[in-house]
Amino acid sequence: MAREFKLGLANQIKSYLDSEEMHYSFDAENGIFRFGMTLSHGGLLGHVDIRIVVKKDAFQVQVISPLNAPEDTREQVAIFLTYVNYRQNAGDFEMDFSDGEIMYKIDQYCADQIPTADIIERAIFVPCSVYDNYADPLIEVMLGKKTGREAGQKSTSD
Image (cartoon, rainbow, N blue to C red; front, side, top):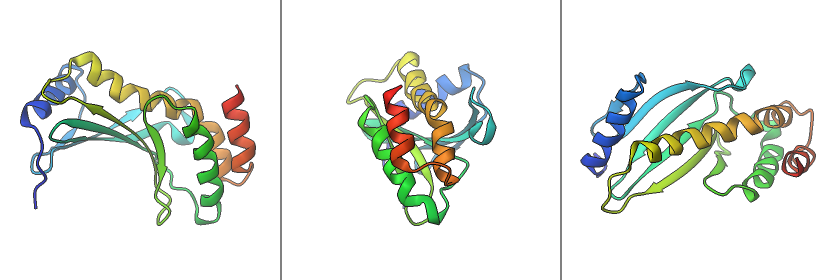
């Protein structure tokens, strides 16, 4: 069954992505854009998958890690993400405990207005920047080199 979403909002996002010459796919039945982006960080988290989910009065940008947290470190990753989330002004990290998928998501409420290109750009690049900032400590926790508390305290005190 198809999800309801605002077509004008989807068209504005499409226009922005086209103007930036981004290569994406669009699920017209559910209002979901998908594309990848290279981060400035490089390394294991040098590339992320991005979904933009268009809704009736908002859109949500989901930036998804290419690496899932291993089952034996998921609890420590959750602790780390809790430390990091406490400092976030917009958006937050989530982890699916069933498979270890990690994403950062941000919602942009639009009501009856169509967002400008600047608003769409910010909604895409803020989560990417957050991933860049926390990639190294996240990987350390995922690999069991640091506890979630150690990495979280260090990351949020810098």
